[in-house]
Image 1 (tube, rainbow, N blue to C red):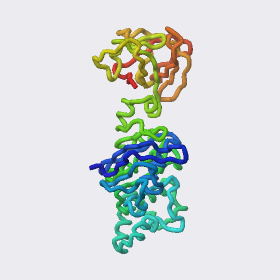
Image 2: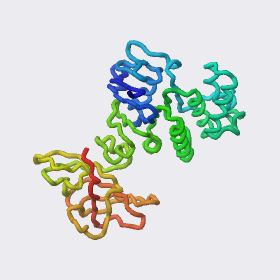
Image 3: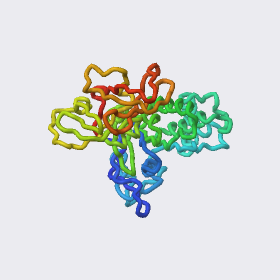
Image 4: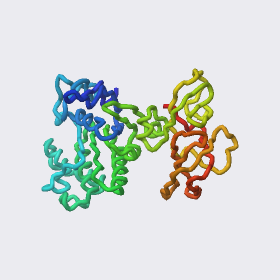
Length: 358
């Protein structure tokens, strides 16, 4: 049985449906991220799980017990959950040790047990030497570790994190996402993590639920979301991609000004398609190459003109246009040693099985 289950969860404000019939299940010890742009409903969903907001429809269940429904909700303090906010919400007048032990104090844990558990968790998050400092004496990353330790030390059934790294600089964010994953692997707490940063979600998640306009577009592993997106929104939100619209007829893919064999599709099969079957495919900039000569199999390449370029250090980011028609601009990442001038005619080669039909 899944530990945390959202069944047809809805939240409406007036005529605006912020969360729309959302279904999601988390297994015991799983870390799932809710990923999406601002306003997609991910934080509202997290707050309904926590019990801060009552749903308009549907239910939140833990171990088969309904915690939230339109008929009533279990108060947040009785849900066995911990939540970490963007602002950390640690007490400025308490030391690190006092902040971490606050939840245990509220639960009336005996003093000796409280001291032991606080000491253990501070060692785990590498703050043992700072136990007597106050929050103002800590860096942003250290304050975030305090918030993590305080949430974990009470041994919650479910851990909720609401964009916890948004206030940190880029280097600290990268360090802390590794820390969050390390702590999850050690304690195996069922975790829901809200973020708008796709690289953050990719780095820490067992699965990612991509949200758009209150709905989940796709739930999958990071690898599957990146390599096998099911919708244009997911393909564009998870990394960079080119969306090419055309038609598929039998074994060919016809686009504006060029055509490709259907065998290049990642999901190519023997199904028969009628003529003028509309299709949209996603192809990543790094899944194509630019070369000066036609490829051995000319069916896998098209002649293009370089219309723009940007040097990114580890690669050139080229924009090319098919030579056979007005077409659509295509982004291609190329080895930094391959230097092409704007206006050059070259060949764009598509890698086999790297075109994904959406």
